[in-house]
Every structure is written in C-alpha cells, then in structure tokens.
Length: 274
Ligand code: SAM
Image (tube, rainbow, N blue to C red; front, side, top):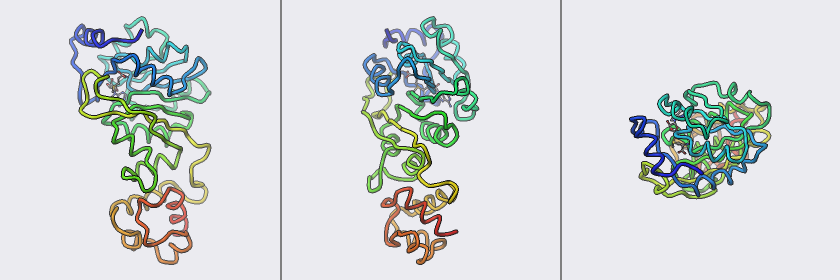
C-alpha cells in the first residue's frame, strides 16, 4: 500500500514540516499514478533504480514493491529523517545530498549493471538534472521522469514542433525521448498550478554525432547562437561564423531556421567549420 493523502499530510505534520516550495516539494498521493510510473519505467526485480527527490517515499515504496534494488537521493535533511524512519523503506538505500552537485557516478557504482532513473523530479531543477545525467552518468541508461508538462514537451520535441529548442537537441544528442502520459495536478499534495507529464528517455549506444569528429561543446555553441535569434534564417543568425561554402559543405540550407534542423544537421555544420 502506498501513502494516502491523509498519511502524507500526517507524516509532515508529525514532523512539524510544511512542503518547501523552493525545493519543488509536491508529493504524489495517488496509488494509480505511482503504479503507472513504475509500469512505464519497466521496473522489475532485476532493475537497479535511482530515484532523485524521494520526498516522503511514496514512489520509493512503490519501486521497492517490485523487489528492485532502489537508491533514493533526497536533498532535504528533514525528509531524509522521515525516509530513514519509515520501516516500509528499510530495503532502500537512502542518500542525502544535492543530486545536481553530488557525484552520481559514485552513487551508481554500487552495481556495475545498467541503471534506470525513475523519479518525480523537483520541477525547478528538472531540466539541469536530466541533462546532467545524460551528459555525465552513462551508467544510467534509461529514465522515466515526471516533470512539468511544458518542460517535458521541450525534452521530447522534434524539429518543427513548437516546443523544439536547445533542450530538445541536447536530449537528442544522447538519446530518444517521448512523452508517455499526462498527469493532472490533483494527484499531488500540494497541488501544482500546471499539468505534469511522464517522459521516457532511452540513451543511445553512441551520441548522435561522433565526438571524435566534432565535440558536443562545438555543436552546442552553434545551437546557442542559432536559437538566440530563433526566428531568423541561419544565414543571418550564423553569418559571423558559417560561410556560404560551409553551409553547402554541410548540406544545410542557409535559408533554414534553427527549429528545422536536427542535432546531426548542427553536427555537420560544426564539422564544416573545422
Ligand atoms: N518522490 C516524491 C513523490 O513523488 O511524492 C517527492 C517528489 S517532489 C516533486 C521532489 C523532491 O525532490 C522533494 O522531496 C525535494 O526535497 C527533492 N529535491 C529538490 N531538489 C533536489 C536536489 N537538487 N537533489 C535531490 N533532491 C532534491
């Protein structure tokens, strides 16, 4: 049984706590949503799961019910104390710290197997957390994360979509993302003002552009410059760095706008500057 709304509120009250908005503390209190997250995360007894932002442990408990091995990171020492005192979570490895700055490679070095990140992420830092995992923690091979709808749509967007931009390209450099479902504010305590989405991200075996040819930094310097003037044609926004010959060599139309290019197109443009 997962934590009900009343049990979650009671846990906070007993500890004299209020949800901290600056830490994105919106707790899931709906059993169906928790089961859905675990199902979409394809968590089994064989899985090594890392959860970022364990809160009161509602999702942690649901993850443990699969017999998976679960490591849960939480920044708030008040909540860590609650997590460590809940007997239902005794099988979880609880780590206190800031997932944005801690050594996550050390955390997942507990097992050499591939890991999956399954989390209801703190909304204020969801994008940097996902990008950090993709860029720095290769052992985490998949993710099923709940994030603010607008943020998730940006992660999963493709060329031509309204939400497409630098974040979509960064995610696309490392893997494939899709929105796996929508979640209403009613499943949380306290209720956020916006809808949430569940985003599934699968890491690709190799980055989309061979780092031996052109580095991620070189590609994303161009991406930043192009999206800095999103409505302009590339021949205008990139005039200072990409010559007409370089556009031709890359096979990219100088009249295109940045939202029409995928990460491989930007990769070829960056390569044509070398
Ligand atoms: N997993 C719980 C649930 O689903 O009910 C709580 C999710 S809540 C949206 C996000 C949690 O992340 C909060 O407990 C918050 O304290 C924690 N958090 C915020 N920033 C964090 C960070 N940088 N590193 C680790 N945890 C963080």
